Image (cartoon, rainbow, N blue to C red; front, side):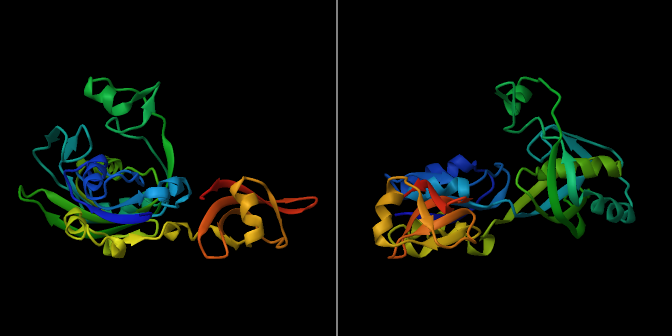
Length: 296
């Protein structure tokens, strides 16, 4: 059994919890998730199965879309609802101010990773330091936010302003930090109170399955599993003949007639099976295909 299954993760679970439960449903099979969702978050968590785990590094998941709720009037040490929150007694903000602030966070911006994150600092995870009460300086990182849309302004059960947004962003973006920074600029403070990932690369929430549904269909999972090459369509494709298969399997370079091919390619055998990921290089003696990873 090889390919990708798109899991709709429930809040309260870690990404590893998802893998652990899947291992009981799909035993004796290698599994690996793409990216990570915080425990409080829900939504799209693609999981590679079998030899597809060897393809994770080639999957493009840079394009992600989230729907988030941020509560104004409080600041959290984790920047989300699961942290220690200090509330402000009075909360006033102007909707026009919010509308003016949000566009400033679109485009290429710098973001400082939160202390409660898996980023390394001198060999230690930031969240391990944070749990010891240690706060360290972190370098800002460049991220790309394609858009940030205001979806709704509501009130929570405590009558605090509740802002709902949709964000399309690059890999490495912390939505809770985005909420925290917006709250600071508003002067109200803010923390992430709900988060759903509705897209990660080609995987969307409309095509995601809950763990309960996967378990119910464990005797017939074929309809839930996408082919191993499903998330690799951003790579070029080439089909090779039987007589060159052995060379590819042995990691040997082969010469191509097509001089327009370049970069990483999906390599298929004559029967349509993915046999390798290879790099195409143009040299003085022609276009050469160098296998990078082969699948016998």
